[in-house]
Length: 159
Image (tube, rainbow, N blue to C red; front, side, top):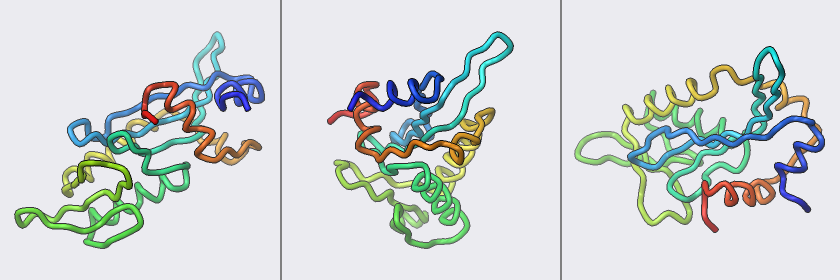
C-alpha cells in the first residue's frame, strides 16, 4: 500500500498536513495533528483527520478516540487523584504528580497539576479553528500502523 497521506489526498481531494504542537516542550509532550486542508481563493479550511499524543519518541495514543481519552484522564487527574489507562498516580516531594505510562521510553515523565492545566490549555488552543466534521463523515479508517510510516517520514518519531 502506498503511504496513507497519498491515499487520503487521492480520495479526499485535499492536502494532508501534519503539525506537531509542543504541549510541554521541557518534558517532550507533543500533540500531532493530521489535518485535511482545503485551499481556495477565499480562505484555507482545516479538518481534523487524526491526532496523537507523543511523549519523547513514543506515540502514546494510536487514534483520536485514545487521544480524547488521554485528555479526559488528564483533566480528571487535575480534579482528583485517580489512576487510569494512561497515567499512574505518584508523589514527588509532597507534590501530587502523575506519571505518563509510556512503554518504550527511557525516562519517566511526571506531570504536576500545573503541567496538566498547561497541557489542557495548549490542547484547546491548538485545535482552535479546525473543523471536526471529517471525523464523523470519513469513510476511511486506518489503524495506527498505516499512520506510523508517515510519522516516521515526517521525522516526528524514529523506528
